[in-house]
Image 1 (cartoon, rainbow, N blue to C red):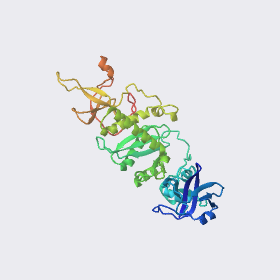
Image 2 (image 1 turned 90 degrees about the vertical axis):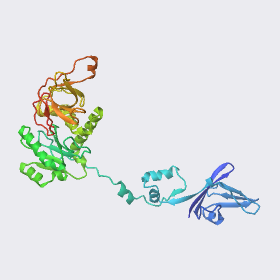
Image 3 (image 1 turned 180 degrees about the horizontal axis):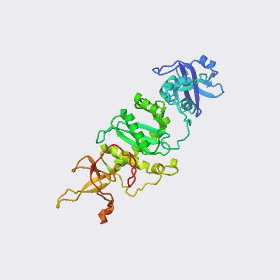
Image 4 (image 1 turned 135 degrees about the horizontal axis):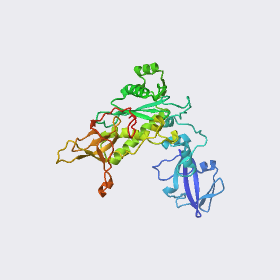
Length: 419
């Protein structure tokens, strides 16, 4: 049972006949209309001279039917001109349309975008339990200032662990841990094999900060509530040192946004460096070291356009030796014979923290997949093809192996931050 709507054409004008509470079946090819039922709906009829005229409650002539040979008043209409109208509540239609918004549901009917459905105005618009179950989102989290801003190094340290990486580094590291000072924005990173080593590397960072006289102790450690930060040994160490531990509630990264934004920025730089130079994915740790070095040597608006290195060490860094990460370099070969070539081709991976030298990646065929520390190197540029001289750095010395553990020295030229 529902409402049947028939569009009629009288004297070239289209009218609509609405039959309420009609019983209809799609398999029946014709329909019978009761004049008594139309009378209850306010319609009037007039029969005479072989014509049946039907007049709407508003006085409009909506049908003029001619009596046929069987003495029946039969009105023929196309299938497109007759359709049923189903009376639904707003919530019933909302559920039928796949739980679209209530406003969109009402707008479809009000604008006449669909036919065959009419809304029941007497039903309330309530929230669907299914919508609450499916569309529930996190409630906005306010960020009240619960402490004064950090003024000195160590007043507040933001810590976070990222990983695991889908590809391990050369030495099997799949995670990295970041420490960023709130006052200077100076960032220190460590590549770690597993995230349960967070406490061990926090001790390394704390010892570096105190020994290098950047602070006398860490006052506040800000982290999420991951188990790697809540171990008994970690808590006992913080309590013994007098360090306050600020934790964010689970699934609320916005409360730890500084560390999360830092990790995202470092990852974006890793992607950019590797994509530009096309180097293997297992070098992501070396790209991370260089990205952190660059971050500490770039101006920040939060520091009044000063660099974290400058704020921490009191003098601006010297970037004269900076090159494009992954660029081609020629490394002097001191062990070659008199008839052998004097250089080998490698890729520059940034500065080494432990010496005044450079990290060099050796692609095939010489030392495939290895990274060493080199000092006698020549930077290759496009100008070389035009006969110009190579850029020869001033550093010199011997070859050493690369270590994944960051250095804490700050007396290098150009200055190298701990990574």
